[in-house]
Image 1 (tube, rainbow, N blue to C red):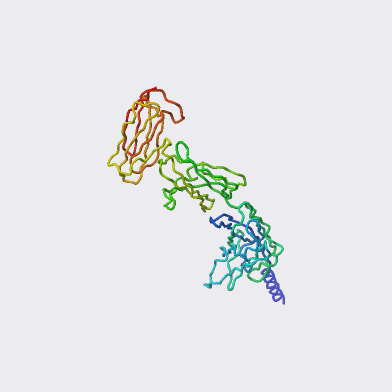
Image 2: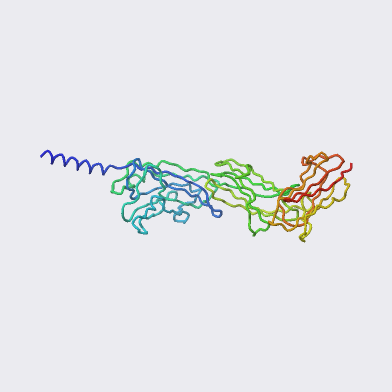
Length: 394
């Protein structure tokens, strides 16, 4: 009789423990901007339990959002896309509809998203956050914030363990009020005395790692990565900011008379790129910069004597670059005084084959007038090096 009574106690305890509910927590994570026109705000809804090993059943998330940021009734107006997260991917039974996601508008500023399993035992809930669903919403107004919150009063009692027990408690108090994308209010280009100057202004930035400059010789041509925040500190972004910031990039490696096209990419912390532009400009032949003077390809390297020589106040230098093994090569044209000190960098960059000329006004890099005397111009292209003697008279 005692053994029978003891057995009943054990069975009762086991049934009771199997019906104890596990708490569940909902949070937002991985918010970032994608796209160009339109732009999207993408994020994950994460779930975690206060105990591991509980089979995850049906769930329902009610999410409030900013109507200013995304518009009203985003499901009805086809502005939201919802896909399965990690915990819904475990199709262990080989059934295409092993897990399903249903979306509807609960109000003009709230969406209801239901997830459920058709068959079998789903993946287990863990004590670490795991993605339940991934959401992408079209951004309507970039100057606002996301305004994402859960509506926990509607979610309590809707979250089910695999055995039919309701999760308890249900915690859904997280908020995502992130400023929306890197908002660029201006992106333009201008000519300066020694090159082209790109200017852009951001009104706000979100998860902005930095910027990249892409350049092409044609508007519809192939744009090559020209400079990046990865190796140029002036292109680093502000991360997250709601303040205005102004940026500049100076391109001194240009040939007068050639039009250059630029695109600006802002890159978020996840590597997603949003491109702006293009903008274009050409350095006028009147600027004291390198000019391409012939369409013919020279047969050999040559640095010609400057003319006039002697000179006052300015002189012109001409040089040839033949066909190279690579399409371009590093080229440098420097001016030195009789002590071997560099006083002026006339050009330093990459050039393809051609004939070029550049004017020098007898000034240093700092813009100071040099005294009369002997100076040397040195052209270096790869392993080629040539020197000419110049005389500045005062």
